[in-house]
Length: 111
Length: 113
Image (cartoon, rainbow over all chains, first blue to last red; front, side, top):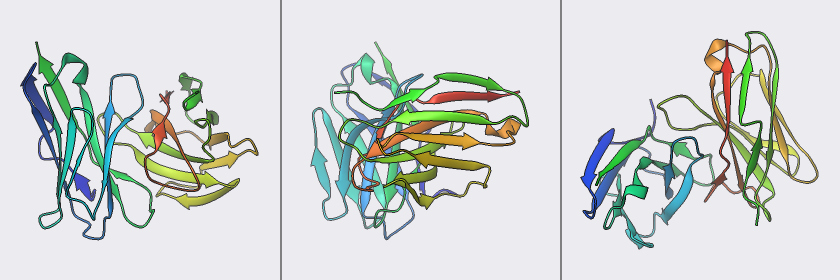
């Protein structure tokens, strides 16, 4: 099985609300984590990344939280917009091994 | 600043045929990784090319091979195509052999009939 997965395959949120997308990983040696957004017909687009020596990192409207104790990663999107509708993937690696991707969560924004 | 470019965007082949997909990395990048993405799944790592050599390889058969050219562009070749090879093939680029912060192209959608 995959070492990285997601709790929910789909998520629907109202426009303007905050979104939280969750990801669990099983490899305790993982030291790098990354979130990608994939829109229909396009390749994955980098959102934000975090190393295992941090537990929080913020970007523009996005925050990634890392809980190494329970091997959990989350992506928070503030004030979700219709353009945020996409599939979101978390991925991880350790020591520059190839990235391992989860199956993804589809985010639908309701106007 | 050109991003990662892939060609062709779509391709239809029949079982047993061979296919070549092409990728040019983002400007300033010298490392190319190839991923296969089946419908409804996350991308799966095929292999990585750096300094014109295959540096890392995922769990894919020898039918999958590649090449990197001196200008850092890369090709993915698949021989003896199977129906199960139908997928979106993604190229990602990075710098100095890194597997962090990969930049992806839009992919080549391969359909095997």
